[in-house]
Amino acid sequence: MTDPFWVIEPADRRPRLVHVNATATGGGVAELLSGLVPAQRARGANAAWAVTGGNAEFFAVTKYLYRLLHGQVPAAPLDDPEYLTVYRAVLAEQAPWFLAEIGPGDVAVLHDTQTIGLAPALRAAGARVVWHCHVGAEIPPERGPGAVWRALAGELAAVDAVVTTLPQFAPPGIPDERRFVAAPAIDPDAPKNRELAPGEGAALLAEAGLTADRTSPRATVVQDAPLPPDARVVVQVSRWDPLKDMVGVVRCFTGLPPDVHLVLAGTDPSEVSDDPEGRAVLAEVTRVRAELPPAERARVHLVSLSMRPPEWSALVVNALQRRADVVVQKSLEEGFGLTVTEAMVKGRAVVASAVGGIRLQIADGENGVLVDPADTAGVRRALARLLDDPALRRRLGERARRSATARYTMRRLADDYARVAAPDAA
Ligand code: UDP
Image 1: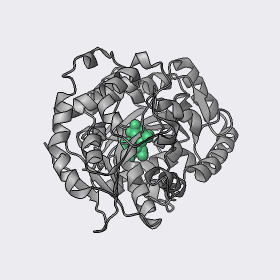
Image 2 (image 1 turned 135 degrees about the vertical axis):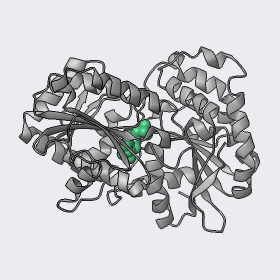
Image 3 (image 1 turned 135 degrees about the horizontal axis):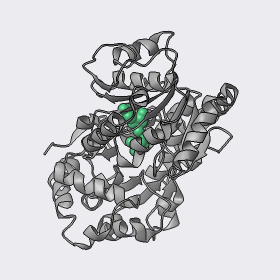
């Protein structure tokens, strides 16, 4: 098992505001914290970021809880009172590391189910404990969330405040004054989002091996031939997770005009420690691609990006999102899709599923297009309509840029957090 470690150390003083999550790279929470912690420091908070360790068994449990909160798996395993034993034992082993760093007067912000198991120990040590749950689906409790809340009742009882993207994602029974809603944010100046110099994006995509016939030590590309310079491009950037439905994107893509290419890009699965399904999903997408008729297969490109160093892969994602004529996010459920906002701030036309937090991000027909992810033909029609209408793409993209830039700023999120972390002082 890996040990906990600091991604961003606190200044050596108290009080501290310590964010705790399960991975330093890969996924939206890591992305968010890399911008939020500096923004909180700029506001004067002694903010820091620590990552828990874990092992395969631990992450299998947390991934199951993640899928259950989205109603994707049966709840029966949680009827076994022993089901969370390994989960709790792994966090109990790490608790001393956290208790040495976080104590009375400090605030611990535990992100997602991977870390809520630390709540009882931190609460007992006198810290204010905030749980930020980034996931959620608008489904009845009996489809999954209810079982999670029952199984984690002891942990939830040790939490002082709960933060979610939508109010309905919070566990039931939390009094109003302890519930907070905060939409995520992005950093427009970060490598992921900053403007690229002329030629920089093209150079990055060539370096990754997508547009040039070369291999990169930092990217694994599955393609028949490099992406042609004049192709119209549809892009989805995601972790390789069943909920992102990369296979479904391939199915929507077939039948689009022959100059349209699809790029599916995701983090190298071996580098996302808390996501055990990545390899299997990437293998499945690779298989589905291989089974396409040759002419269609040649237009589907899979890119698996190493996060080492993180700045390079962020720049490649940036370049890909900017290269896209249309960005798609066909998630089956989504607490909030940072990738959607990242595409919007770049003025892209986005086609995204009308689920969860994405419905906050996009007003259909106004600054993007919302689709039903179960309706393959409907998603294909939405893509085709946008690909064929550059003026519509520009109009939606421009409104997307304006709305996302105004709403999803790190400053706003740091302000939201000031209320959560110290409600009496706000
Ligand atoms: N991401 C990345 N490289 C990849 C795939 C994803 O940097 O190859 C980033 C993506 O740009 C976004 C985050 O990972 O910042 C994913 O966040 P999102 O909220 O869309 O989904 P999550 O992974 O949290 O479910």
